Image 1 (spheres, rainbow, N blue to C red):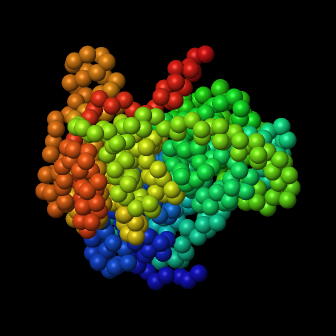
Image 2 (image 1 turned 120 degrees about the horizontal axis):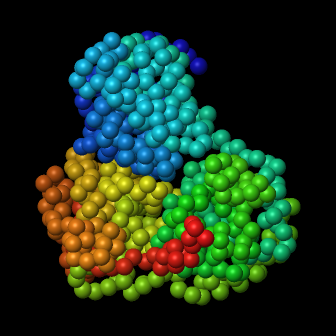
Image 3 (image 1 turned 135 degrees about the vertical axis):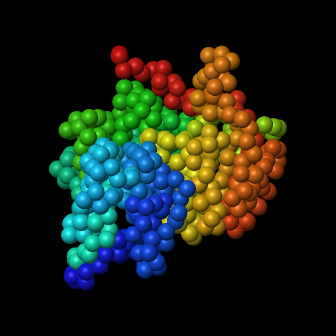
Length: 577
């Protein structure tokens, strides 16, 4: 640990971000962050990416965090800039994505005097606005306390449960000198895998009860957060345990693996539904998943499953609200799976005794169809079925390519028909679900993973919200492929609204814009596809373009989404019963 020479606050922040492993800062310039502009010229190790909108900058940082396993950083002005960031920060919080958000603020001695864009605690109070959306929101008053609050914010961001943090940086903090110890924080949390061993040992006893032979695993985002996918595969294979994932965790278990059940919940597979909600399952091991509506098939996982449930999670809110002390384990999924590995000699006899039954049970489940309406994946004719377009993109994108899926009807089609084979290759803001999130988030993903091909599945409604960030991707010649499911409607909203008559249908419809021309206007490649037979060649051209490419697919809006199991769960459950 060395003591740094005094440096300007901006230089301290940029040096600290580099020390934490970041190479990009996503930002929108403005008067309140002017001191960063010359400072960035002094720090070539961190590249500024200029977003069109402050919300887009935070979405980019969010995407960077999800793809890299580290965190993302975003910068903008306070006041209107901070307001624009609010939804993006909320999306990161609900999906537990670690993001550092920094906003500029006026000098301390001008607070409350009517200075332009004053959003200090004397007026709008950006801290108070951000507080419910973040793990920490503080004002840094000067260079003297910059190190303290910057490190404290990083610690709050990395501590469980993870999430975004916010610092309001006064002009004083940016331009004062800061002399502080340079110590990176991220390394403290790199291998932190806490586990309540007493609870874990009790869970292993339940898991190895001789009467509980039909065991399945439901893997949630905690597997991704803990980098535990490899250990999950090892444990599942050793004892022939079928694995389903939540939609947020799609890809943490290869979906073409013999033990894969696919996604359980919204947009999920028949196999996952039949295994978890069927009458034969004895024990369900839930690893790193919450119990929200979509991940539990409208909460029916508790009401309809006869299984004994073991729930491993770092979040005590989830554990205390959705389990009892005999069946919950506070701690890391990775640590719990490691314990299973270490206790192999003890637990193996019971788990091996049930292997033949589990294989037979899984064979029965897989004898039935996995997906709904598979004919839609190669439907001829125009307008194009969304499932046909998504299937064609999956066939064109490399196996290790990364896809981001936006909010709308296309989310259900992608959840159901897309196959994901590795962690952090299927990325979506599944809890809050803001429209247009994936368009800028893909920029952060591509910056984090320049070695991978990145594609986005979005819709025309999403394009109206954050489509402008296509120009950001094109500006930096990022080879992202954007698939726009252009169905002239607000997908899911229109599917509901049309049942209420002509006016609701009209209110949820969208004019047919030329999104390919929109992309070309910003320097990207633009393609329009009306014939499904042209999809494959068009995707291959887009992937070979070497720059940002957008494919405007003229799609059919009258396509019910493949969520039959989820709808059945909704009809079977009522909060009032």
